[in-house]
Image 1 (cartoon, protein in one colour):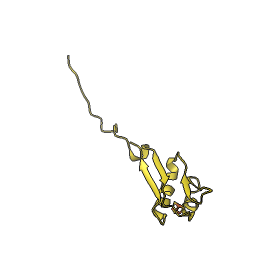
Image 2 (cartoon, protein in one colour):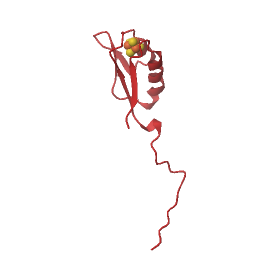
Image 3 (cartoon, protein in one colour):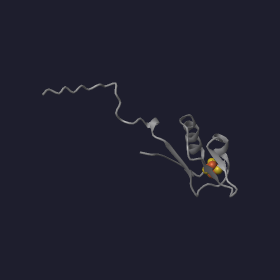
Length: 84
Ligand code: SF4
């Protein structure tokens, strides 16, 4: 019996970064300045406690503004991870 294995370089078997969902959270360093809600109001909101929170599901088109918000946060309270 003869088996022929072909390698096709156009088939990408590894998950691309964009395919992995983004997880965003706000930690205890938040001082409630509201900058993240101004930068990306579709993801971040202010809670009654005076600190920010992030929604659970992040759409790919929101990712650039989420990253901008994290970079702009004065206390580095926005944590971004990707599920694997
Ligand atoms: S920018 Fe940072 S400190 Fe300001 S509200 Fe958002 S998470 Fe909190």
